[in-house]
Structure formats: structure tokens, C-alpha cells
Amino acid sequence: MKVEEFKKLAEKYTHKKVNSQERLAMDIFFSKMQEANKNVLVPISSEKREKLFYNIQQNLTIKRKRTPLKKYLAMAAAGFTTLLMLGFFTGMFSNNYTTIIAEKGEKKEIKMDDGSVIFLNGNSSITYENNFTEERTVKLQGEAFFKVARDTAHPFTIQSKDLETRVLGTSFNIKSYKDQVPMVSVNTGKVEVTPLKNPEYKVILTKDQQASFKENRKPKISKGDSRDFNAWTRKMIILKNTSLEHTAKIIENWYDVNIQFADDSLKQLKITGKFNDEKLSNVLKSLALIKNLKIDSTNKKQIIIRKNPI
Image 1 (cartoon, rainbow, N blue to C red):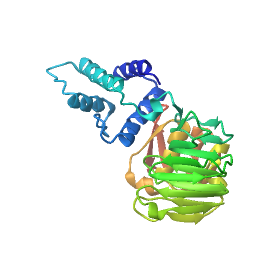
Image 2 (image 1 turned 90 degrees about the vertical axis):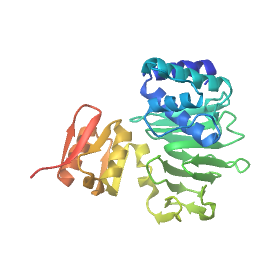
Image 3 (image 1 turned 180 degrees about the vertical axis):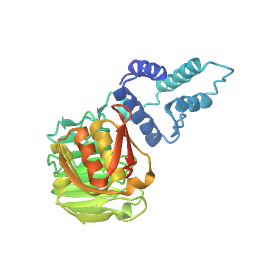
Image 4 (image 1 turned 135 degrees about the horizontal axis):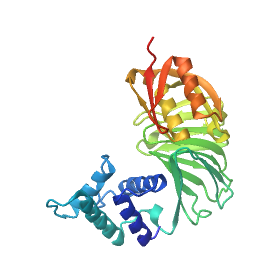
């Protein structure tokens, strides 16, 4: 993305006129700024988006004296775009990089120049250099299934949530959402996975092996049908003793909705089942029936799960 394009996007963002894809792109940008530039002048907080601009304003020493919020945010955005003009770009907004985003409720198939194919799940993104055949490195946020074309001279590397996965030619699934334990599952070939914070816990995985990586712990390796872990590429949701909390996150990404629990104890309920390209209403009805739940919709995007009163 060029500077002028980003300046326009920043202005839209300030006035809350961005669409969901543009908002996701901004979120990814902020995350990358934090990861790639530890000494950057812009501190990225976990507060609401408007507070990000407040932090920018503080670091630019722009004094606010009874300035209306709308004008104030515009000042902060102007300061932010000034930083961009000074060269504080991350790779994903450089002309040398490409970023592809799959929004919630969306899935994408990407055919790479080297012959590899990447299936991108909802609420996910990948970033890679445009000279991909020479430097086969992909940065992943979210979940993707990879079919990697073999090239012994150029290993294929995926960088995701505290993990680096390295292969030559194989197929495997990586789940690496921010709020979930990272997991790698191998369909074919051999995969080397290194936890970046604990490289001594590096593991080699082969067909039908899975590994989950909790922070500062040895990876938990299991064996199972790897097709279950990438069933989403075939429009299927497979749940095996899955917590209702994790099931809700799957549904959120799959159908682009937001799910809340009226009672936190419901989150630990375990669900087993299979849904083959089902409508959201059918999935919710099944969950309600299986676990005796009451599921309400305040609107098309907001869902509340409650205990079903007897």
C-alpha cells in the first residue's frame, strides 16, 4: 500500500467510515508495528481503537486543550500519517509485500507462484514477499491449510503466533488465532516446528501427528486423523469433545457473528458432532438440543447462549 492510499484509509478510520475488511487490515498493521518495530514511536495498546490515536497523540506531544473528540482524533491521525511519511512502515504495507485477508465468514484459496496452494480460513491473513519463489516465507495470522510444492533449494517457512514452521514439500494445517493455543497438524510429509520463545522444544511432526504449543511448556503431541483438523477446507465443522467456548469461536469465524455467554460456566461444556455445510440456524438448534441450551439472537450478528430454564 502506498503512502497516499494509507493516508486516505487513516482518515476513513478516524471518521469510522472503514468497512470490516479495512478495519481488519488496520488491526493487522498495528499488530505488525508492535512485533516488527519494538522501538517504534507508536505504542500499541489493547484498548479500543480510539485510544490508539490518544497514545499516538501523547507521543507526538500534541497538546489537547478542550479539543472536540472528532477534531482531536483527526489531529492524532494526521500525526500518525506523518510518522508513515517518515518511513515507519512494516513489510505488509510495502510495495515488496502482498497481504491477503479472509474476513469472518469468508474462506480463500491462494495459488502461489511456486505452485504451492494456501487455503485461508475466516478471520485470517497471510503476508509474503512478492519474490516468493526466491524467499518462500509466509506470515500467518489465524488459520490456514498449506499444500507446499517441493523445492529443496528453497525451504518453505511459516511464521505465526510464536511459532516457526519449516518444510520442503508437504501438506499441513496451522491454527494460530490470537486467543487460542497454536496447533499444527500434518497431512503428508514432515514438518519442523520451533517455538520461538523456547527453541529447545522444537519438534518434528509426520503424517497424522498434531502438536499444540502452550506458552513456556513442552508441546503436546498427539496422533489422529489429520483430515479432521482441516475439515473446514471441505466446508465441514468437526467437534470432538470440544469446549462450547472454543466451538463458539469456530462459529464466530465461520458465520461472521458474535457470541456471548450469559453464564461463564457454559463455556466448559463439551461438544461432539459434525456439521456439513450447515446453515447457522441449524448449527445453533443442534447445540441447543444437545446441551439443553437457550440461544437468542438480538440481531443477525449478536447471539447469546443461556441455560435453558426448566
